[in-house]
Length: 206
Image (cartoon, rainbow, N blue to C red):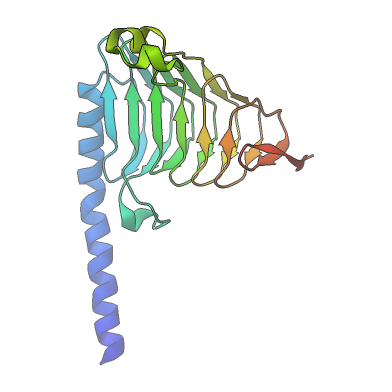
């Protein structure tokens, strides 16, 4: 009896996944289209949050994959992917890129190379969002003017561990690995493993 019940639940779960696949695809197309995203084939589990400002540009390469539903990647601290591009921002995501519950905010330029994997809850910011001068932060206009932005570049085949934060002006080289929960404030060369807060060199890959 117990085995029968378990089998029924497994079948129901499979049917649920099969039902959601076309719904997720249609919603993904709609979300990308209304935001002016240039995209190719993709597979979304759940629906990413996308907001591209007027004048912003967002490009997604082939075979993009995103996990936005808890059951698709139950890694903890669950949320849908959040992909935000400001009115002067350019966000470029290469081919075969995968992400889970990732937040990207692009006000200038963020470029993610081919075959990059972004672990659960990774965040990437190319902006400070506010001026570093407390006097300017008291005035909304001065706060906006005083906000600094710098491009973020992630090379091909890089892997960014879960819950890591990548801040403005950072370049991460090809094949590099960033350990989980790292805070990346400096460039990481190709073929190296870095981790920590602040991030530091661990070892060479090759």
